[in-house]
Image (cartoon, rainbow, N blue to C red; front, side, top):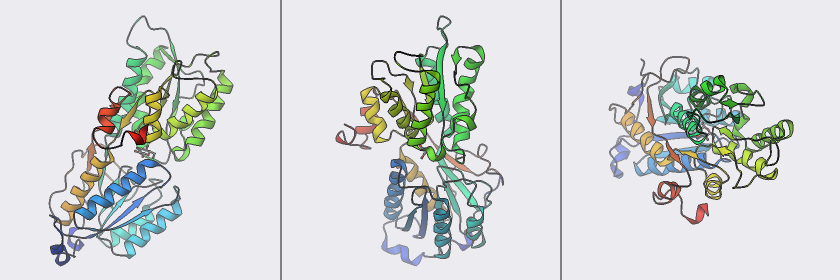
Length: 356
Ligand code: BGC
């Protein structure tokens, strides 16, 4: 295991910190987020900025337009030339930042990979995320229960598969976690995928785009004849909500409604999905509280700045091609219309009005 922080060059702004009520040595933290066009990354950026500032840090926050890789590369170069003390980076393409982050390594700036793992770069000190494999397993197990696949009397069920962007390392864990649960049922014939598209590459959705997912679902409906009056479609595995929203759009346009809607999974509890779950147009989502992840990252950044032990709870799972990256995995939870109010509204994540 390697822990590659170069602490000696860190957090020189010790004198400045006396003005802040903070336990950390105040520092300049560069934050790079992938896009402003998906709700979750706006929330992540906002929560991180707020909580890092509350800890006394100066924050430089960039969004890379709408998933624009060259923009993210040049923003990271800017953060390095601005001599940030720590970088927190959620990559668009996990494999596209090796060169840009070499600059951080050369200057001894520790990098925390945020939510998605940055691949093939030995500049990464830590990784903070949710348990991504567990997300996939939660979705897979949900489908097994909802379709009663363990029951001998259950007749074969029709399913189609959708996952996210192939350049996002998380997809390996989301899709892999779900398929580890579902593959045995495909093998035994209890689950049937009429399109035959069951491989990650065949079911990927570039940039997790709602429009791309909608197009693919429309094509499946047209080619397989799925519909309330046509070929039965019992379930769809979708790795997240932006993809699920596209699937829902296509299903509703072809005549499905709450009374005959296939079981549809998701992840994030984005507002449109929370609304769809209430209306019966998505069955479940996996909630990853961005406030919890931001809290953990602030703890990690503070520990780096204070030269204390950085909290991690996984030192085995995430190899980015240069070795294992010590990680902190937060816990995802399942949400359906039954616990939606309790988890999302009562906790203050959304107001009732926001998801009406
Ligand atoms: C995140 C998901 C998100 C997806 C699309 C993934 O890397 O872990 O929460 O839905 O990106 O933004």
